[in-house]
Length: 167
Image (tube, rainbow, N blue to C red; front, top):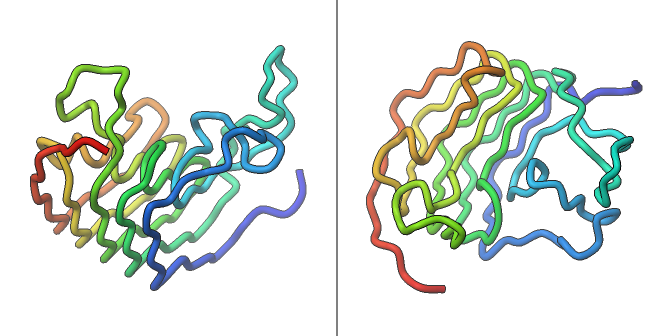
């Protein structure tokens, strides 16, 4: 399989009005599971009958990832932070605001992209983040895929409700 990321820190960045280069799947990857502002996934060739050249491999190959002290303000697709295929992740002291509305569903908390999405991961600590958006609860803002994820803790994260505004 080759080298897997170890002991990586993404710290002290500001992301404003972020988007991905969706039209070219070889450049940015168009799979829904790859769309986010900050993302962790192990990907490889897609051997299915799909137009997407890459897919997630569901292999926990990323170890010791820290995402801290970042500002993510307004993004246009997927979660702000998308964690997959990882072990030993710390997401702390980030400020995340103004999530995109997912127009395919009726207006509700679920119609906003999550601030943080976690799947196929193990030992993830989410703490002391500041979230501002249309989510109704922390569970709406931080979505955890329970069937594929173990040992996720969420503590000290603050949610500030903000009514949706058209973009």
